[in-house]
Amino acid sequence: MKKILICLVIVFSAAGLYAQTYPDSRTDGKYYTINGAKLWVVSFGKGEPLFMLPGGPGNAHLYMRAFDTLSNAYTLVYFDGFGRGKSDTAADVKEYSLKRDIADLEELRKAMGFAKINILSHSYGTVVAQGYAVKYPENVSHLLLLAPFHSYAMWQENDDNSNKEIRTNYPEVWDTLMIIRKHGYRSSDSLHQAIYGRVPYGFLYAYNPDNFAHHKRNPYPHQMNTKLYYQMVGKDGDFKVSSDIGSFDYRKQLKDLKMPILIVAGRYDHVAVPWMAVKYKKYCPQAKFVMFEKSGHNPYIEEPAKTFELIRTFLSK
Image (cartoon, rainbow, N blue to C red; front, side, top):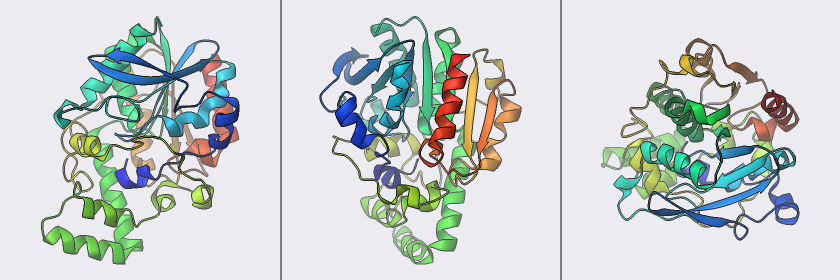
C-alpha cells in the first residue's frame, strides 16, 4: 500500500513484548540463499509452519510481529523478501517483481524443508499469497488473506478512492500536489512522496485513528523500500498503477483453489475498499469471508481479540 504512509508502519502491538519474550528480529535469525540472494529469516514456535507475508510492496517483516502469540501452536516463519529489511537488495530495480516474490517463497519453503505450509498474508502480501496458491496449490495447507487485493482493478480503486478522500478532506495537501504535478512531478519523486506523507496514516487506514496514535516505529533496517515499491506499482503508481501491480488478476482462478481459505476485510478500509473486497464472495465462493465492522486496513490491531480467535479457529480445522 501507499509507500510513505506504510513506511510509518504499525510496528507496535507486540513490539514491546517480543523483544523480551520472543526472538529479536534484528539478531535472532539466519540467512538463506534463495535464487542467488540472501534472505533474512526469523523463525520460532512449535507445530505446523505458518509463513507470514507483509504488505507494501516493499515492507520488511517487522510489523507482522504482532502475530507472535500464534507461536504457541505454529512455527512462525517471518522473512524479509528480496530488497526488504535485512535481505539483499537488487543491483537493478528491474530485478524486483511479483514473479520473483512468488518464486522466492517456493524456494524458501524447500530450503527450510517443509512439505506444505500455511500462509498468513496482509495487503500486498496477499497478492503474493494468492499467486503462490494458484501456482503451487499442493503446497498450501491453509490460506489467510487479510485486507487482500484480488486484481489490478482493485488496486487501482485503492488509488482512486485514496485520492478522492485526500482531495475532499485534505484540500491543502491536494492543491499542493496538483501544483507540483503540473510541473512534471510524479508519485516516485521524493517531493511527491513527502506531500503524500502529510496525510496521517489513520485517515485512510483506520476505523479509529487513535488506535495508531501512540505506536512508535521500532529501529530496523530498510523497513520500506520505496524504489522497489515504485518499480512494482509504476512510477506514477499513486494515480495510475502499472508494471506488476498494474497487471495481476486472480479473479478467474480463485474459484479453483481447494485449500481452506479465510478472507478478512475491514469496513473502514479506504484502500482495500469494501465494495471491491466483497466481490471475493463471487470470485472465491468456497472461502470464509468476514467483514470486521470496527476495523480499517489492520483488523489485527483494531479488533485483535476477534482477529486472533478467528485465525486460531480457522487454522485448527
